[in-house]
Length: 330
Image (cartoon, rainbow, N blue to C red):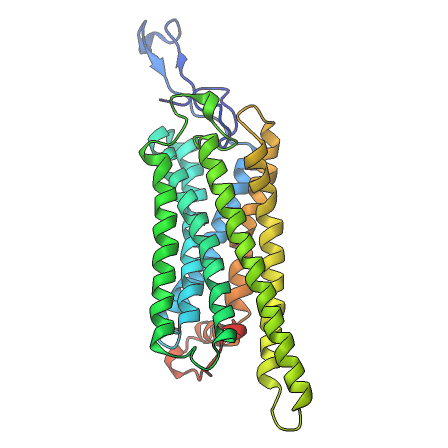
């Protein structure tokens, strides 16, 4: 399967074509066949640039967490999982651009679409795991800093990446529309049914996150009432930090919904015959979620800022003083 001239945009479901040139250049022979690579359009270039920015941001976060021994707490493991997933998503976007417009490999394109499905699924799953961790840090505040928390974190990470790997392998193994373009969805070569499964999984995760967020709000309101009655006995600094963390979570949920809802709804409603522009207009905001995650979860953290400052000053991060933080601080 090779690319032909006049093929559609890279992410659409019409797929590649073959150009036969039996009467063209004599050097090709009377029965020769030439594979022409398509020219990238503005939307493809924008997606590639977005993937580059996403990769650079999240590579920096991963390097900071891996290279800083103090960042071994469960909350930083979850943030690191989110950064790794978004890093894979960014690299997948860049390599997909190369596979379509530079190499012309249909097999490589299929594998990269599977990688992107896995990466974005792991990113969304990591956001859910972070939400669960924040809820448990408030609900079980007295027992949060224990070995059980570390074990639970590894279990959540295993479930997130196991599920993401399974959904990413589906199009590579068999569930694609390479042999039947009529079964394609809005993203080639993913089938319509596969995109529906991904969309349903997204809505389930988003619903759980909303429910957990509502529970966190109830806990904080209850704590605030207790503080109001015992203000002269208990300091309120911890709960101020908690409310700050919840405000951050509200921003995360709002950004998450704004970035992913348009594309998810379009996956349910659209098909192979849907307007090409809509695919890009909904897919591009989805990539922005991976771009803003490092800003919300990592670069706003004071300890991460100290490490960044140390890197700029060529200092060792082991000499930087860190204070103990709860998930609400991240």
